[in-house]
Image 1 (tube, rainbow, N blue to C red):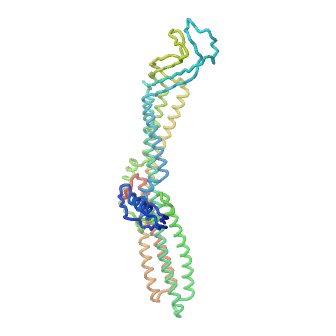
Image 2: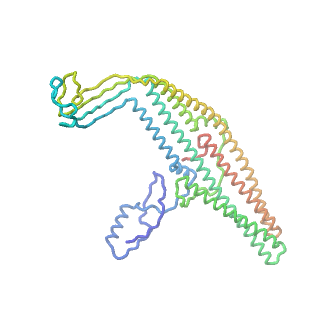
Length: 487
């Protein structure tokens, strides 16, 4: 049996979506020769596994929230940031485990020459005869070293690791905000390219109609138009057609860039839920409220704050290294060599047969103070650098919010002005087309009206695009999504 299947992509669905399987698959199967067992097996398999084949459907139209959600799941930079967070979390666990000390296990196996007797009755053999009467032996040591007093070394290391993890998480939020802004730019840019292509296609159609009417009037002997009018319209159409080709190519490239950003196949047919580029709805608050919110919620500010705390903990850790560490070591030491006599005399060395517990209090102190003080100075210099960067970042953040806020206001004003120009251009075009249809208008006036309306429409669409992007930039600078988007 040789089935003919149609290649397709599996339709993406959220995890909580329930999929109902069809009663039968739409593709047909051609059977060569009678094969009832195979037909029964195929039917039985289809009943047991109704969802074995992917659902043959195109990618459903995507909203802006869908695109952002997909990008946040598939962005390689965010995946790398997640790996960095996992590494920082592992470092924190290491610092937590250091509070409980460390345990070691050491064991060696080998061969040793035989020796019988004791210190008062030694064997009559050459002690240098290391290869005579060899026998196996083993030594093992199990030890636990517990820190008792470290003068703040463990506490500072734990604090530095915890603040480092928080700083890494804040850095991930920074990359997340950048990904959201990138997707918004590509989404609005794709809508803009589609809209510009639609406007140019409409104008190209109007140009074709005008050319046909001029040709018809010339053929009928009308004196209202001339060959010069026809040539002007044809030259204008050629220029417009070239622009239509460029904008269609730009729209295709922008759509592929959006598909790449959200983790879709570049060859997939990506459809957007929105057909028109409309200005987003935003009720602007005061710039002061946005600045206050940015200082509280911007991940960049949190990243600097946690990084500063982590470096301060490292300074304390380097200072604590100037002091000793008191510790307790306990464990078991064991050795066995069957071919040697165990020495009971306490003055006799015994390296091969013993079993003894160990429990000692100790002190460890590296007294190269000149090197340690240099490391403290280095850590303090790094802390001063971060403090200066934090002061600069706060003023820079305020300036960034001011700039983004002014861009929104300017884009809003430009959009309103462009909307009025588009409305006037539309009225001019309608009046000029009506006059031309009635035979009282000139072809040159129609050509100019088409150009004026095309320019006014493209200016308005670009103004809407710039306004939406400015709002997206303001959302990033504030550190909160200002639009009603759930992703």
